[in-house]
Image (cartoon, rainbow over all chains, first blue to last red; front, side, top):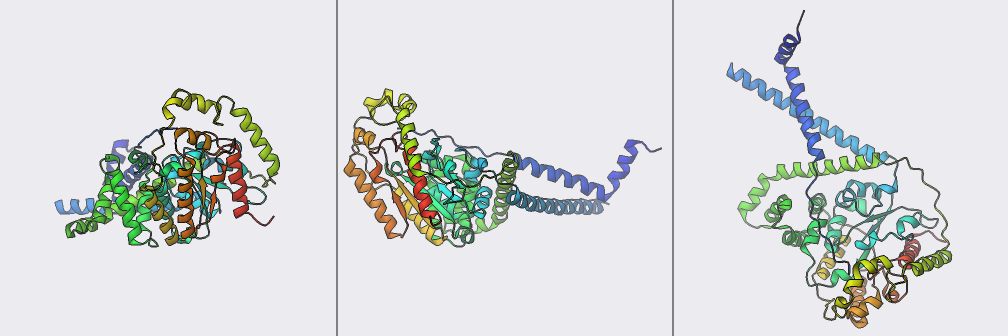
Length: 48
Length: 399
């Protein structure tokens, strides 16, 4: 019977798996970047 | 062995990058589709403070596609009287939503950047109203911090990339924004881009070419983030079922506006709304007396910015309709800015607009009409209603 570490070790040898993991990381980075809000200058105006 | 490992690493990185780019492209398409097809709820664009609307492009593009009336202005858009255009459009004669956009310090230069950011093909035939304020012209130079607060990097890059705009128009905008943005780290990317773009030095031209992929990526990122934020806002709105446009009974609305104004202005002689008077004027009433008697309205930099805006509208095929908002005559007389000084300003502004063949609505003769203004400078009950009525006449279908 294969243990989880065995399966992971075998999977990590496979090119497709590595590509999948790196792609997921890159996509996650994009999603994080989409949440970034720019800093803003606040300026209160004189109302009279 | 090492070479094989390196090859594998490069292969994994290359494939992953390609897949990620494909996913990002797919996301971009998905957001475009969703933004243009999700039910349109005007509540999304109506709040006075909405940076996604004011600094983005996706909302603007969507509103243009829906034929909305762009209502570009500044702090008067904050006045929430029941006569605000967001409550009077669509109506039976003018069955279009309004797209109010702007905050204090959104002046000619910022409006130019906004109206240049969408291509001429989109802006052609669009209904665009610009509300100008006398206060824009009341100082030699417009306020730097205000321009920084209203600056949109996304719109700025799009305007500079717009092929319909002349080099001189772009250069003017770049030089002005360089002056306003330099020194604030929030804008260092835009400042560097502007500096390199304006420079005639070969090394700067070369550096700009080298940095083109970076700025292309940055522009794509800013646009994608704008769509993402817009999608989240549109999607988060409650379901919307548009009611049939109502028939406005203008005489009855004027009577109601006068009544509301009368009830709201009871503690001062300027016809200023009570709470505004208590908060801003009461303790400063001696200070403001005569303080504006030296104000010069005819020579400020705002005039050059206005020229740039009108030129840009011509180049980008924007049909502008300008509302020349006057001001509360009772209060401005008190501050020492004479009626003659203001009249000279209105004369100059109407002259500039006539010279540029821009239709306008001049509110000069409303300066002393009670309840026309909410406070010392912003349209109020009767003022907004009058603007609603005139916009309906200007754009509306035959009655």
